Length: 246
Image (cartoon, rainbow, N blue to C red; front, side, top):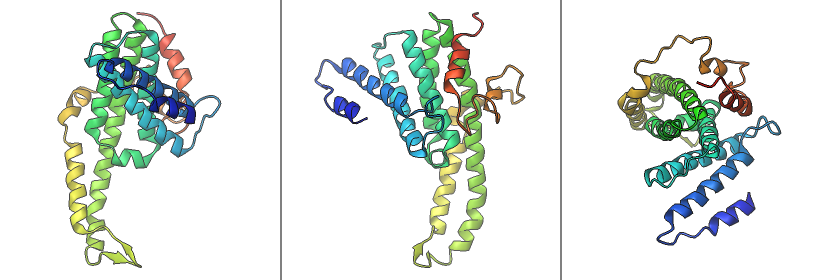
């Protein structure tokens, strides 16, 4: 990691080579993800590693998005693999780490996964596995967004009783407590995140009845994509790349 960080710090950023600089930065995030992600060698990394991996995954997806908008992204099967893996890492972290799920902005999750869906759709014109990766991400994202909305709703429903208990005093045993005003801000934030807005395209028309062949089945306990435990990303990606060709 120290070697990669040193290499990253030496990436040139001169005017005229922005696309090259951006490409180098995506390579940095790719390598960090490979070091930190759940893998056969380290199936259950620490929460700190997963959290850091989530950060690099988000930066990688956004870096690909910038290259895509600049028409500087060179399509290849390696791009499909990297984009697919980084998006799965993002979704996994949202399921596994409550501290990330509670602070993330839902519209940002929709925007970041939307980058992956757009790029994979475009690459899917050339390689079938990109289409399959896109379909998998679309379905897993829909479930993840619905889960985030439900979690925020539960937080909102418990915020009011908690605020009524703490509004009479701002401190207990010398520790600062959340005030009623802070609870109002939290409620407003949750309501803003829970408004359909940019999530409409993902949630409209979603069939919540799980089909036997649905990717969502792999989210269930014991499935190889059980996001609440140690998911087997390698098995899922093998399944996508080696599935029945259209």
